[in-house]
Length: 569
Image (cartoon, rainbow, N blue to C red; front, side, top):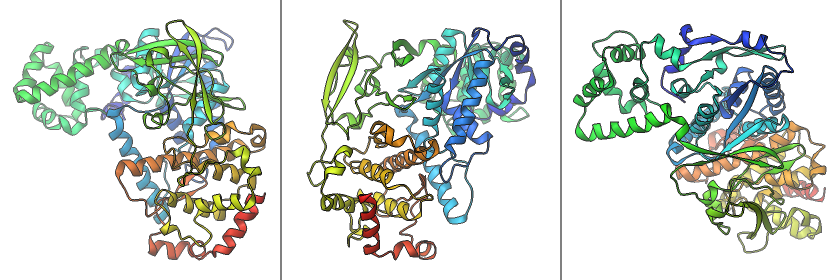
C-alpha cells in the first residue's frame, strides 16, 4: 500500500524523474548486464494483470498472464538489466491486519459480483505462481521471502547498487540508488521505455534533507503506521499553511533550520507517552528507510536449481518455518514452498543451527509417500545431510488415507464410500455433514455440474483424492499432488486448465484460513466456479431458490450415478 498520497505527488513532479531511453539506446541486445534490477514480484504481477485488463473471474486468464509476464521480463533482460525477482511466501505477524483487510475486501467484491452482476479486478489466487514459473523458465535469479519483501528488496538494492522496479511508494523515500515505477514503463520492440526516480533529486527539488524522511513517513502513514494514528498531529501543526496535506507538510519541514527544532515542535504537541511512542516509530522508520542494508542478512547459496538468495532477519529466533523450503518440479517449472508454523507441529522439528534456508529435494507429496526426505546444509560441516520425516495419514474416522497410486486397487465399493463421504451424497444432506466437510461437499457438487468444460474423469479423481486430507492438514496446499504425481498424465492439460485446478485448491485454502481468522461459522459454505470464489450463496434462501433450483433439487440417485461413472473412468 505504501505511504499515503506520496505516489500521486511524486508522479506529478517531473523534476524527480530521469528518462532512461538513452541508456537503453546505447546498449546492444547482446551486451553484458550493466544494471542490476530488483523486481518487486507481487507488485509486478498485480500491475501486469490490471494494466492488460485480464479477467480475474472464470479461470483467471492464466495463460495470458503467463505470456504477458514472459514478454515483460524478456524486455527487462534485453534492455540491459540483470533482474532479481523477489516474491513473498508468508507475511510477518505485524502485517496480518493488512492481509486480513485485503482478503475481506476480496470476499466483499466477489459477493457483489455474484449478487449484482458487477465486475471485479481482484487478482486471481494463483497469479503469483504463474510469475514464479515465468522467472524459473527464463532462468532469472529469484528470492522467495519468508518475511515481508520490502526490507529484502531495499537491502539488496542498497548493497548491490541496484535499481528497484515497483509501484510501492515506500521505495520512493528509501535510501537506494534509484526506483523505476511501473506506471512510467512501456516496452517497444522488446525494449523498456520509462524513467528513473532518485531520492536525492526528490529531496533537492523539495528543499528537504534526509533527516526529514522518517517524519514524512510517520505523519503521512504507511502499512505499519496507519494515517489516523498521527492525523490530528499533522493537521494541528500544518493548520496555518495552505495546499494539500503533502505540500503543507513539506512547507512546515522547510520552515525549520534543523531536526532538533522540528523535534521540539512535535514534542510540544504530544504527551510523554505519545512522545515515547513517536520516538519508537521514528527509530524504526529511520532504520528501515535510511539504513536498509542493515535490516537483513543475505546469504547466497548455489544449488543445482541455480543461484538462489536466502534471507534471515537479524536478531530473531530462527524457527523451523524460517529455515525450510521445499522446491518441487512440474515439467520445466520450479518454485519454492515451505511449511507454515501450524503444519510443522505434525512433524519433527530440525535444530535451526543445523539447517540452511535451502532444501534441495522434496520427494513427491505427503499424499503419495509416507515420508518426506529433506536434504539440508549442516552449517558446521558445510555438507549436505538428510533427515526423514514420517507423515501421519488418517481420515477423521481413523482409517488411513489412500494414496493416489492406490486408488485403482481399492475395491469399487470402498472407493465410492470415500467419495461419498466428501460429497455429502448417498442420502446425506449437506447441512448435517461435519462442519469441515460442508464447503468441499457443496463445491464439488456444483463444480461437477456447472464447470465448463466439465473436467475429465481422471483429472476429477486427482482433485477429489487430493482434497480428502485437506481438513486433516488444513495448512497444507493440496494442489502439490497435481504437480508431483504422474506428471506424464497431466501433460495433456494446457497451462490454463492446470492453473484453474490449482487455483481451486488455493482459493479453498485461503477461505478456510480466513474463516478461522474471522471466527466465522461455516454452516453457509463457500462456493467456487472454475477456481473462483462465488461466496456463501447456496444457503441464502432467496438467492438459492431463484438461481440454483436445479442444483438444490438434484436427486441423490442422479448424483451417485454420475459420480460412479466418474470414479470408474
